[in-house]
Image 1 (cartoon, rainbow, N blue to C red):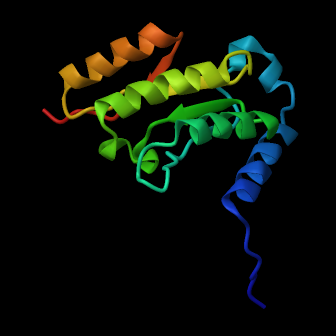
Image 2: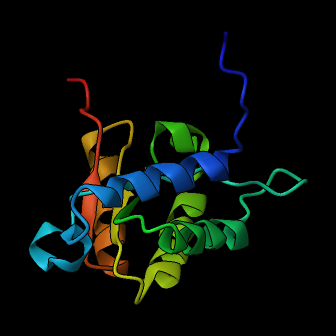
Image 3: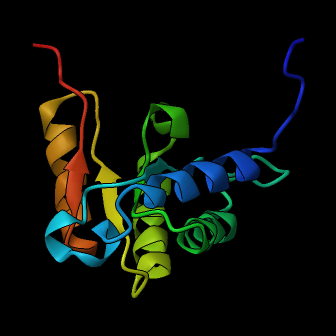
Length: 141
């Protein structure tokens, strides 16, 4: 008999976050282990007119925090990082830092770019808005 249950993305994320805290519940309390546990790659939300919805991006932080997630990652390939303009990414960095302030979740800001110079530019921008950890993809050449 095939399994036919359908879950929303939020229900799936909530279940994953809850499951990640069952085996080692003290990980989120230990500062030295902040990068352990569930780190969710956030989706980039859009308005009906196709603009990045920064208010909804901030709400994703709140949702993940209420689900017990230990960290957030944005933007990555699944966040449509390749299609975001420089301005959209920088505003997203600021939005996430502000929304995550005081939540206790690790925040990983993606600094991927077409080349090393671009990666360094995003890394400087991330450093300017928060204590951060950069996520990157290797640059060819």
